Length: 95
Image (tube, rainbow, N blue to C red):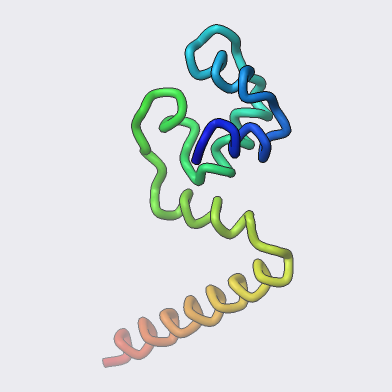
């Protein structure tokens, strides 16, 4: 993604993003969070250059971008899967 596209998505100027990237100016926590969400990366990746997010954190970020209806569908799917795993574990314990 270009600086121009990211700046547009963040409603910031390209010059501001360029200055922030070079360390000429700082950014707010809100802007950092927005950048992370748009780029689907952790703040560690932005700040330190390494992506230390777990699979779960990455999944939560992706789910948070969905509509409430889509999030509810995911939640129902997870609950169904967990119930099936619990039943499977109970069956295994009975053997």
